[in-house]
Length: 110
Image 1 (tube, rainbow, N blue to C red):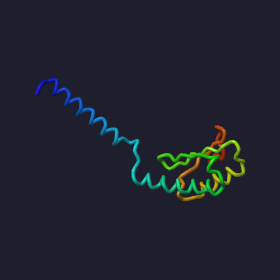
Image 2 (image 1 turned 45 degrees about the vertical axis):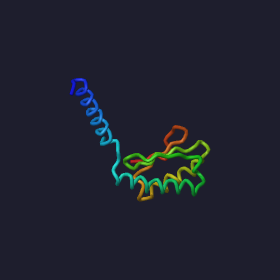
Image 3 (image 1 turned 45 degrees about the horizontal axis):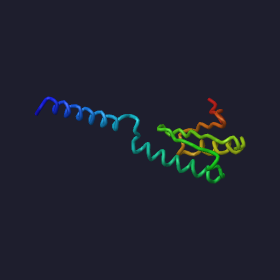
Image 4 (image 1 turned 120 degrees about the horizontal axis):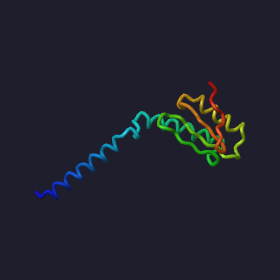
C-alpha cells in the first residue's frame, strides 16, 4: 500500500469519526424529550386551532420543553392572554414565552 493510499484511508477514517461525533452531539434530543415535545405540540396546536389562531400565531418548542409563541399584531390582548394562561395551566407544558410584534407579552412574574 502506498503512502498516498494510506493517507486517503486515514483522511476518510477521520472524516467518518468527525461525522459520527456530530451525530452524537448534545444538539440531539433524547426519546423522552421528543415525547415531551410531541405532547406539548399537540396541546399548543389544539389550543390555537380551537381559537382560530392557527394562521395568526406560530410557535416553537425548545429542547427543554419551553413553548415560544409569536402572535400576529391582529390578535387582541385578551385573546393571547387567554391562550398563554391556558397553556401555562397545562401539565404537559413546561413554560410559555410569548411575543407580539417583537415585544414580550404575558411575562412571568416572580
